[in-house]
Amino acid sequence: MRRPAAAALAAVAAALAMFTTTAPAEARKCPDSVGARSAIVIEVSTGIVACERQADKRLSIGSTTKLMTALVTLENAKLSQTFTASDYRPLPIESQIRLLPGERMKVSDLMRGLLLESGNDAAVTLAEGVSGSRKKFVREMNRRARGLELKNTHFANEIGLDQEGNYSSARDLVTLAKVLRTNAFFKKVVDTPVGTLKSGDHERTFRNRNKLVSRYSWVNGVKTGHTRGAGYVLVGSGSKNGIQLITAVLGTDGEAARDSDTMALLNWALPKFQRIRAVVEGKVMVKVPIRDRQGATLSLAPDRTVRRIIERGKRDEVKLDVVAPDVVDGPIRSGQRLGRVEVRQDGRLVATVALVAKSAVAAPTPTEKAKSWAARPYVVGGIGLLLAATVLLVTRRARTSRRRPNRREAPGAA
Image 1: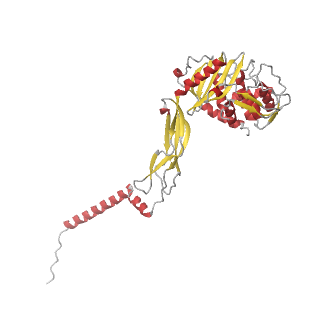
Image 2: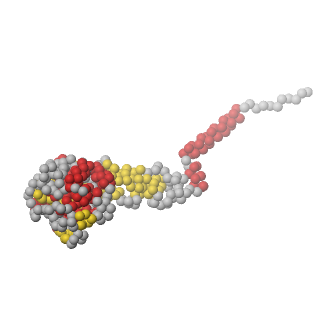
Image 3: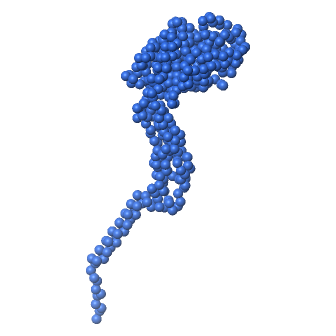
């Protein structure tokens, strides 16, 4: 797998930022059952914030720092590359995948170790392999944070250890997770209950520290974090009925509270959204008159279905603008594109769908052209005027003829 271009991911991030909206203030309050110091839950496709609590407060975030470590690595390295293990010696209490000095491991496996086991030694090895030094890598992490407009985020290390200047917010973390989920490798790894690292000196198998992934089939990520300063942190995600949510809870008291808060947010927010078919493939949306076919029309229909997520009860926020010709000329083949449907949600253009002909239209015959020409208003009007003028002329001549005196023949000469 080749690395995504940084510019391409930046463009994705900018596009995603456009969809970050908030629900009305009265709807943003998180349920009382959520005890986290800071919390948020968003719907991914629209960016709608279902609820939030101190979502912009700067807090220590523990190993959720590694989400930015993952992003910078994905943007600047290939998964097939091999890096040499760093000389970093983690303390026994630190999360680690137990890399041996000088051991060589593929980036893909280092990423699995980073995201599943939250290995600090994997994080340092990736940082040095990507940037040459940890210091340069952290500078790149902060550059990307600015590029993503994470206004309440700054990094002091690539691991997530408590350190002055290493912080983020609930809102920034879900924004970062939303960008990362556009990468197929990342999305698959964080949704894996157990992962095996096959490169390196020996195989290693780790269980995902986010235990919700194995407990609930619809939970699909993302990353845990814990330090004394941060408490217990979890960026979570789940999908049901095509609705994808991302959550963040910061500053909880323990793993049980962290997991409970995350599930409370997911279960509370899911019913607040619904998935609709804004545009249905094949459903006739407009009938256009066919030139030279008096009274005949051609049906136009979308060539694909567009589904949208909306807040329940707000279907009227999705509006359709149909752009189609006033009249069409044969020949036309079935499936030929002849217009479009523009889908707008809450005033934003979110999709454009082609309108295609439901049937073929042959070229008009000379007789059809003649009939069509004769039926045109200006032709009918012209003929009417000509007939009226002819009748008027004949009538005038008749009247003139009746008014002339009779001329008698003059008598001949004697």
